[in-house]
Image 1 (spheres, rainbow, N blue to C red):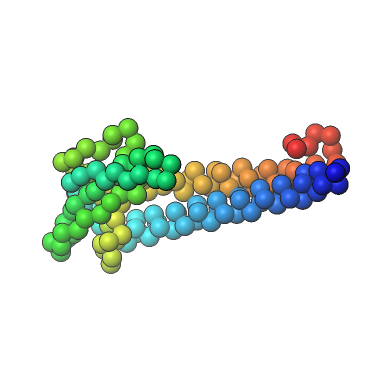
Image 2 (cartoon, rainbow, N blue to C red):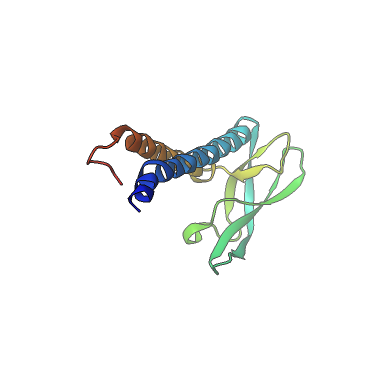
Amino acid sequence: MRDFETLMKKVIVPYMILIFGFCMLGFACYGFYKSTRIYLNGEKAIGKVVRIEITRTSNRRQHRQPVIKFKTKEGKEMEFISEAPNLGGGYKESDSVEIIYNKKNPVESEINSFYTMWAFGIAYLILSGTCLYGFFDIQGRGDSKKSLL
């Protein structure tokens, strides 16, 4: 039994933390890539919230996401569901919002705010850094009595 506990503390748990950290780093990189691509190839426009989309998850929680309609510079009318949740009823029908869309592919659109463009990438980056620090901290302590586990 003691060997299993040692195996868990020294091998399995630290490497699970490492794998989780790298997954979060991957999500952060994807979020930054997506936001940067829209930002660099982007064109700004003013959109209007036409409705709030309500979806339910498997555990019966509601997600409220604004549906935004806007016109491109070429005059083409587009509509998209923002990936950002409508926390606390931040957006209401008929609100005007600044959006940014990819000039080459207007389907790639998002509300132009720090929260919708960068916050999730930063959160995943912090979480991945915490996991990676935890892994290397556990590995560096060796047989020390100060071990986190």
